[in-house]
Length: 239
Image: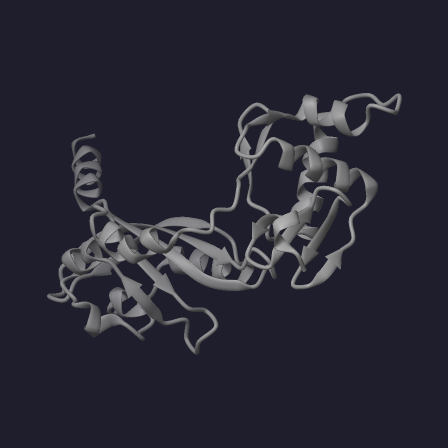
């Protein structure tokens, strides 16, 4: 395969602008004619936000078809499923953007742990493909918040943060989201290494392989909302 003639959409995923064919892992990904026109339009507008009306007019210019935003929305969804390596972003107002793939990320990846350690909120990554979905990464803010070093928590499931306080409705929401592989934001009663109660607003998001759609990791972002919770309790007491 002569990569010089192709446009790289991601690792092992290419677009041939002459034949308008997608090649993924050395095999052709078959698209419908409308999907092909859609992808061609998005590729020609890399890193630009384009309106669903403009996309509609480009795809259906030969047809006497009434514009409906839902048509483009469904086509974008179908294209994502057919070619999961694409990074298509949605914006309010019916705008879409196909982001251009950049090969040279080695410098960024080199400093990524240092960058994450600058975050004010705790960041965790777990691996659901290992037994018991263990932690494989925590940043410095997580260690500062809960008092555990990285070596003390890596390879453990996050449930140790609950202590004996396991009867929480929010935990059921998390279990459901993990099973369904969806995002969830809840507030948990967690405990640091010394047993101090921390009200932890946590957002958990699944991370998928862009080419295969396989679930790779769960990203967790922890925010200490203990002071907010205490203030709300004081207000309730006054009222």
